[in-house]
Amino acid sequence: MVSAARNGSPGRRGALSGSVSDSGPPRPAPEDDEPSPMSGVRNRNVLVALHGRRVHLGAVELGRLIAGALRAPLHGLVVSSEPIEPSDVPAHLGVDPEALRGVVLHVHASDDLPGALASATERREAAFVVVASEPEELTDNPLGVGCLAARALEAAACGVVVIGPAHRPATRLRRILLPLDGTPSTAAAITPAGELARSLDAELDIVMVGGASPRDDAEDAAPVSTPAPSEPGAMVAPLYVDQPQHEWPAFTEEFLGRFLSAIGHCPHDVSTRFFLGRGAPAAEILRLAGELASDLVVLVWHGQLADRHGGVFRDVLRGAPCPVMVLRR
Image 1 (spheres, rainbow, N blue to C red):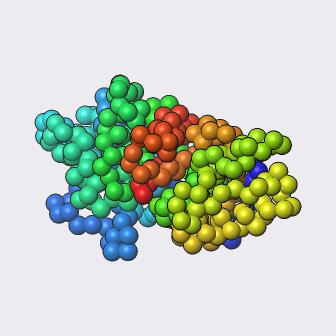
Image 2 (cartoon, helix red, strand yellow; image 1 turned 120 degrees about the vertical axis):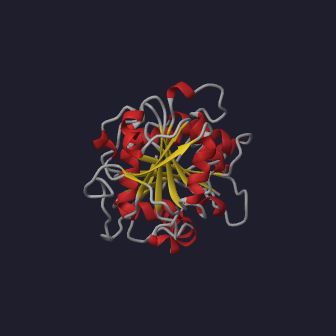
Image 3 (cartoon, rainbow, N blue to C red; image 1 turned 30 degrees about the vertical axis):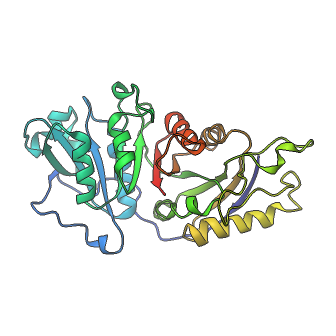
């Protein structure tokens, strides 16, 4: 595996953990639907879906981390077939009230949880939605996640973070794994990931993966998982990745400069490491997520599952050892 690093200078840090609010019990939502004061620049609200027979507290903690980094309010959506008071939400969800401290609660009386989540996401102008994938929902869904998580992925225009039942609650997001396929259309969707990494003071691990490269026919080297050009401006791996003195340093600089900085608008003070994947893209992403102890994997999805890109997306979403953030292109 070939890698390179780029160290960013110390940047402005946001809060990394803790309640959005310093004190007080879970708060009912205000009567109006006023957006966050910072939403004039870009959406800043974070919404967590509170659902299931026992709410996934890891989703709440992950929402707190993201909201704290963005200095944003954390909203919690509770959908019940019968009206309930916000003060009764902890008992309804089977959690200690302290677990929801500082969360702005929105209670909707409805039998349509996915519809209520889609509506709340749009109304709250959410930058990110955090959804737990409930094990009892893992049936025939093509995405291999719970029905609510799947609906959020299909419908939301903002970033969706899926946390699985086996994922441990995060205390800090230190390492973010970001696969890129060397195409401008994918890089154009990653801006939220770079901004979040800077706010969290996290390191971005970039791995280049994709289709088969021209090196597949080389007799002296195993194939790598880099893409053949599939759109204008796409890049493929250099021919001599096993001899870094030839092309690798220049390629790394050009790749990060073009796709991470120029197109992806990643802040320059975010520390990054760059890896070239070998073999099947999904297997490479999952392997690196484990070896690098990633706290979050970021995937860019075009909304389809039938093609190769969709298959990689589904396999990583199902098998990632940590929560997955999905950005749409």
